[in-house]
Length: 196
Image (cartoon, rainbow, N blue to C red):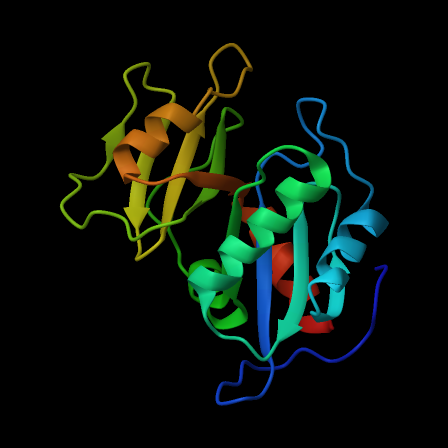
Protein backbone atom coordinates (compact mmCIF):
# COMPACT_ATOMS: atom_id res chain seq x y z
CA UNK A 1 0.00 0.00 0.00
CA UNK A 2 1.17 3.52 -0.66
CA UNK A 3 2.20 5.99 1.94
CA UNK A 4 4.45 5.98 4.98
CA UNK A 5 5.35 2.79 6.75
CA UNK A 6 5.36 2.02 10.44
CA UNK A 7 3.87 -0.67 12.62
CA UNK A 8 0.35 -0.20 13.94
CA UNK A 9 -0.15 -2.42 16.94
CA UNK A 10 -2.03 -0.49 19.62
CA UNK A 11 -3.66 2.72 20.68
CA UNK A 12 -1.96 4.87 23.30
CA UNK A 13 -3.15 7.92 25.19
CA UNK A 14 -1.50 10.39 27.52
CA UNK A 15 0.67 12.27 25.06
CA UNK A 16 1.60 9.31 22.89
CA UNK A 17 0.32 8.36 19.47
CA UNK A 18 -3.27 7.43 18.78
CA UNK A 19 -3.95 5.38 15.64
CA UNK A 20 -7.16 6.40 13.91
CA UNK A 21 -8.96 5.05 10.87
CA UNK A 22 -10.82 7.85 9.10
CA UNK A 23 -13.77 6.59 7.08
CA UNK A 24 -14.74 9.32 4.61
CA UNK A 25 -18.13 9.53 2.93
CA UNK A 26 -18.57 10.56 -0.68
CA UNK A 27 -14.98 10.19 -1.88
CA UNK A 28 -14.71 9.13 -5.53
CA UNK A 29 -18.45 8.92 -6.06
CA UNK A 30 -20.83 11.40 -7.64
CA UNK A 31 -18.09 13.29 -9.44
CA UNK A 32 -16.08 13.97 -6.26
CA UNK A 33 -12.86 12.42 -7.51
CA UNK A 34 -9.72 12.63 -5.37
CA UNK A 35 -6.44 10.86 -6.00
CA UNK A 36 -5.13 9.02 -2.98
CA UNK A 37 -1.78 10.81 -3.02
CA UNK A 38 -3.61 14.14 -2.74
CA UNK A 39 -5.80 12.79 0.05
CA UNK A 40 -2.74 11.64 1.97
CA UNK A 41 -1.19 15.05 1.42
CA UNK A 42 -4.22 16.79 2.92
CA UNK A 43 -3.90 14.67 6.07
CA UNK A 44 -0.14 15.33 6.14
CA UNK A 45 -0.90 19.07 6.08
CA UNK A 46 -2.74 18.69 9.40
CA UNK A 47 0.41 17.38 11.07
CA UNK A 48 -0.65 13.73 11.26
CA UNK A 49 2.01 11.05 10.92
CA UNK A 50 2.10 7.60 9.32
CA UNK A 51 -0.63 8.65 6.89
CA UNK A 52 -1.77 5.86 4.58
CA UNK A 53 -4.82 5.15 2.45
CA UNK A 54 -6.64 1.94 1.59
CA UNK A 55 -8.53 1.49 -1.70
CA UNK A 56 -10.14 4.43 -3.46
CA UNK A 57 -13.30 4.91 -1.39
CA UNK A 58 -11.84 7.13 1.32
CA UNK A 59 -10.21 5.11 4.09
CA UNK A 60 -7.26 6.88 5.73
CA UNK A 61 -5.01 5.65 8.53
CA UNK A 62 -3.04 8.17 10.58
CA UNK A 63 -1.40 8.73 13.94
CA UNK A 64 -1.71 11.75 16.19
CA UNK A 65 -1.04 12.69 19.81
CA UNK A 66 -4.49 14.31 19.95
CA UNK A 67 -7.19 11.94 21.22
CA UNK A 68 -10.08 14.45 21.08
CA UNK A 69 -12.19 12.67 18.48
CA UNK A 70 -14.81 15.42 18.11
CA UNK A 71 -12.22 18.16 17.61
CA UNK A 72 -10.22 16.01 15.18
CA UNK A 73 -13.35 15.25 13.16
CA UNK A 74 -14.23 18.94 12.87
CA UNK A 75 -10.66 19.87 11.94
CA UNK A 76 -10.44 17.21 9.22
CA UNK A 77 -13.89 18.01 7.79
CA UNK A 78 -13.12 21.73 7.67
CA UNK A 79 -9.72 21.14 6.03
CA UNK A 80 -11.17 18.80 3.40
CA UNK A 81 -14.01 21.22 2.68
CA UNK A 82 -11.59 24.11 2.21
CA UNK A 83 -9.31 22.05 -0.03
CA UNK A 84 -11.88 20.17 -2.09
CA UNK A 85 -14.79 22.61 -2.18
CA UNK A 86 -17.42 20.24 -0.81
CA UNK A 87 -18.29 18.62 2.51
CA UNK A 88 -16.75 15.23 3.28
CA UNK A 89 -18.26 13.70 6.43
CA UNK A 90 -15.56 12.00 8.51
CA UNK A 91 -16.03 9.03 10.86
CA UNK A 92 -13.08 8.23 13.13
CA UNK A 93 -12.55 4.80 14.65
CA UNK A 94 -9.70 3.16 16.54
CA UNK A 95 -8.34 -0.27 15.74
CA UNK A 96 -9.90 -1.85 18.87
CA UNK A 97 -13.28 -0.41 17.87
CA UNK A 98 -13.03 -1.97 14.42
CA UNK A 99 -11.86 -5.24 15.96
CA UNK A 100 -15.00 -5.28 18.11
CA UNK A 101 -17.22 -4.87 15.04
CA UNK A 102 -15.40 -7.42 12.90
CA UNK A 103 -15.34 -10.03 15.69
CA UNK A 104 -19.14 -10.05 15.88
CA UNK A 105 -21.08 -12.92 14.31
CA UNK A 106 -24.21 -11.13 13.09
CA UNK A 107 -25.60 -13.82 10.80
CA UNK A 108 -24.78 -17.07 12.58
CA UNK A 109 -28.41 -18.25 12.42
CA UNK A 110 -29.16 -16.98 8.96
CA UNK A 111 -27.99 -18.26 5.60
CA UNK A 112 -26.56 -15.76 3.19
CA UNK A 113 -28.15 -15.75 -0.24
CA UNK A 114 -26.80 -14.18 -3.44
CA UNK A 115 -29.31 -11.34 -2.99
CA UNK A 116 -27.96 -10.29 0.43
CA UNK A 117 -25.07 -8.00 1.36
CA UNK A 118 -23.88 -7.60 4.94
CA UNK A 119 -22.80 -4.04 5.72
CA UNK A 120 -21.41 -2.03 8.61
CA UNK A 121 -22.99 1.40 9.00
CA UNK A 122 -20.80 3.85 10.91
CA UNK A 123 -22.69 6.63 12.70
CA UNK A 124 -21.31 9.99 13.77
CA UNK A 125 -23.26 9.96 17.06
CA UNK A 126 -24.37 7.28 19.51
CA UNK A 127 -27.21 5.19 18.11
CA UNK A 128 -30.51 5.12 20.06
CA UNK A 129 -30.71 2.09 22.31
CA UNK A 130 -34.47 1.64 21.98
CA UNK A 131 -34.64 0.47 18.35
CA UNK A 132 -36.85 -2.56 17.85
CA UNK A 133 -34.68 -4.96 15.88
CA UNK A 134 -34.75 -6.19 13.25
CA UNK A 135 -35.82 -2.88 11.76
CA UNK A 136 -36.90 -2.95 8.12
CA UNK A 137 -37.04 -0.17 5.57
CA UNK A 138 -40.43 0.55 3.97
CA UNK A 139 -39.35 -1.25 0.77
CA UNK A 140 -38.01 -4.22 2.75
CA UNK A 141 -34.64 -3.85 1.08
CA UNK A 142 -32.73 -2.81 4.22
CA UNK A 143 -32.72 -4.71 7.51
CA UNK A 144 -30.96 -3.32 10.59
CA UNK A 145 -30.12 -6.47 12.52
CA UNK A 146 -27.75 -5.30 15.27
CA UNK A 147 -26.52 -2.05 16.79
CA UNK A 148 -23.57 -1.04 18.91
CA UNK A 149 -22.65 2.35 20.35
CA UNK A 150 -21.94 3.97 16.97
CA UNK A 151 -22.24 1.13 14.46
CA UNK A 152 -25.11 -0.84 13.01
CA UNK A 153 -24.94 -4.16 11.21
CA UNK A 154 -27.25 -4.03 8.25
CA UNK A 155 -28.34 -6.45 5.55
CA UNK A 156 -29.07 -5.14 2.09
CA UNK A 157 -31.68 -7.22 0.29
CA UNK A 158 -31.14 -6.70 -3.43
CA UNK A 159 -34.30 -6.32 -5.48
CA UNK A 160 -33.92 -7.29 -9.15
CA UNK A 161 -30.17 -7.25 -8.52
CA UNK A 162 -30.17 -3.62 -7.39
CA UNK A 163 -28.87 -2.42 -4.02
CA UNK A 164 -31.07 -0.16 -1.92
CA UNK A 165 -30.79 3.60 -1.74
CA UNK A 166 -30.18 3.49 1.97
CA UNK A 167 -28.85 6.70 3.42
CA UNK A 168 -32.09 8.54 4.25
CA UNK A 169 -33.70 5.55 5.98
CA UNK A 170 -30.53 4.77 7.92
CA UNK A 171 -29.93 8.35 9.03
CA UNK A 172 -33.53 8.73 10.19
CA UNK A 173 -33.47 5.41 12.02
CA UNK A 174 -30.03 5.82 13.59
CA UNK A 175 -30.40 9.53 14.33
CA UNK A 176 -27.09 10.52 12.81
CA UNK A 177 -25.18 11.03 9.61
CA UNK A 178 -23.67 7.73 8.49
CA UNK A 179 -21.30 6.05 6.08
CA UNK A 180 -21.42 2.42 5.00
CA UNK A 181 -18.83 -0.25 4.23
CA UNK A 182 -19.42 -3.88 3.32
CA UNK A 183 -18.62 -6.16 6.26
CA UNK A 184 -15.86 -7.93 4.36
CA UNK A 185 -14.39 -4.56 3.33
CA UNK A 186 -14.41 -3.44 6.98
CA UNK A 187 -12.43 -6.56 7.87
CA UNK A 188 -9.90 -5.76 5.13
CA UNK A 189 -9.64 -2.14 6.32
CA UNK A 190 -8.90 -3.41 9.82
CA UNK A 191 -6.27 -5.83 8.53
CA UNK A 192 -4.60 -3.09 6.50
CA UNK A 193 -4.62 -0.69 9.46
CA UNK A 194 -2.89 -3.27 11.66
CA UNK A 195 -0.19 -3.99 9.11
CA UNK A 196 1.21 -0.48 9.33
